[in-house]
Length: 222
Image 1 (cartoon, rainbow, N blue to C red):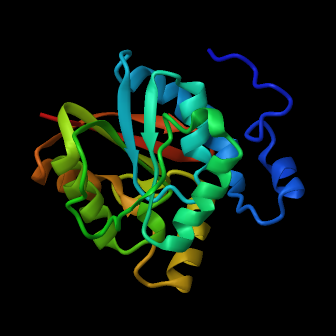
Image 2: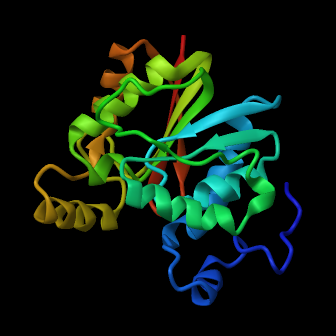
């Protein structure tokens, strides 16, 4: 779907890039899940030039890689802290050719919408709902409802339970570990997320099954 990146592309092998730039933060999961997410987004986002707001962008590796893989997309990263924004800007500095489509990260908190800015075509969040209190998921949905243009989609990637059941053997242990670390964390049930999205006027679309027992939940704004 996309051309193979040049050997000097810092996103081609993030671990090697971090070895050359020890101050960079690296989220290994982004390199494992980015291609399946890209394939889904290529189908779900408009084919015309469009804009995606990513909530809780982490290191910013997804933002930059997706902008390169989907050249019609402007990808707005966000983080809740100045430290998080700095981590994203460190990666942005290595990819100056993407600066026009990956602007400096906004400082927003998922749990406290609304967020400033113009309407967008997509709101995306990866691996957020299970490592934050439930209020962050509710805020993500409410914020997306306010920020999306009509017909835009909210796309939530991560592990989810389905009907109160774990979708894979590793998810039960993962959930237990999360709840031991913080009782407000843990895998969310898809039905609860669907209900929260419906309360904000979203229509649930078919769930995408992703590798490693993950899901991509898709909601369309009316």
